[in-house]
Length: 179
Image 1 (cartoon, rainbow, N blue to C red):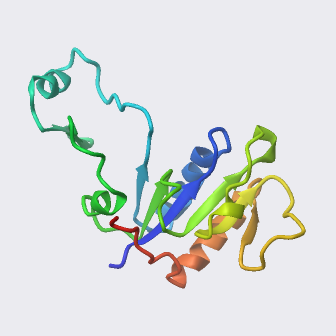
Image 2 (tube, one colour):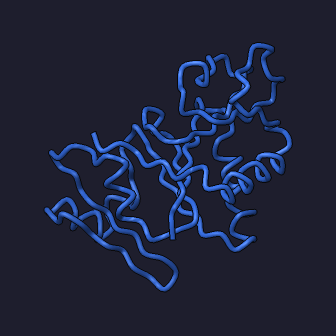
């Protein structure tokens, strides 16, 4: 199985998570296996400090796996190590039809930008040649590159159809850089 990668980028408050929830529900209903990597610039707290797993991490465990009949999670402490590159993180995921990657604006992978001018932040697509489509609640600018696809964010089914067509054509097979 060749896993395809699509980055989803946009400023905080643009609607990335809302669109991703819709796309994930629709894709999984159609039998697609989809993984997600979400980058955060903040510390990630997965369990309260008083829980056994947090206490064991603080005591020095390099990794702690939490397991239950419903799910499992592997928490890897970086301590003084550098944050792993996206390419390395991808090797830790199970095979899937698609990996949606929220964040990682700097990566050299195909990206969908979620753009809402009303939040007062500049568009990213004008400076990022890896953005292949924009989902926005505003009309396309008149000088839009003919290579860039403009989608209506208020009609998420059109975003889904674009994504399904692109997956059928294997348009998202580009891998992130290792550098």
